Image: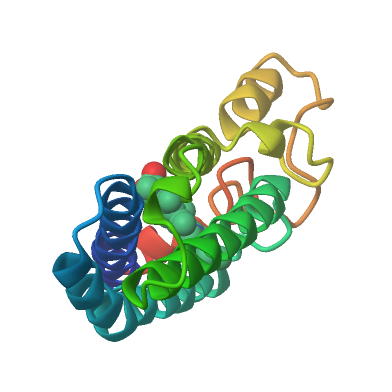
Length: 179
Ligand code: HEM
């Protein structure tokens, strides 16, 4: 239950964070000074705290689910760091544009598509968990069960490992089971 609630909170705070970033990127493309000033306050009061909360809930999920040894999470955290940096760049440009110290038209047109590609890659990483197949310590339970049924021990989980708790899908499955 706590795992599911943490995931819900992770997703809600992500929507607020990414939505805020998209708003800034679009506002810099089509600048209206009064709106840029409002958006600067919104970014400070809503979007930035949502980013911090999304990080916090993501880390809570990783701890609860025992996901840290999985390569997909390392790759995801790297991309999230880049996305957080992109938010910093957008917030800086927004501050300068709202203060009228820069020409908003010049504010990078590529930032929005770069951000959206990053979001797509992050979501693909967390849903497909592709790199887990490369993690030597992760075992596909379906394959290992089939191998076990055939009498071959090659893909079986190592001795002492619970199939639900130490497998290709990570201990997140256990977190569900414990609810
Ligand atoms: C450092 C920050 C982050 C960490 C540590 C983190 C970690 C996690 C973990 C451990 C899960 C649970 C995976 C599962 O139960 O299968 C999760 C779920 C998810 N995360 Fe993150 N995350 C972070 C940031 C992000 C960002 C920036 C995005 C999107 C742009 C994102 C998108 C998602 C989605 C869509 C899910 C649900 C996946 C599913 O249930 O299949 N996360 N995150």
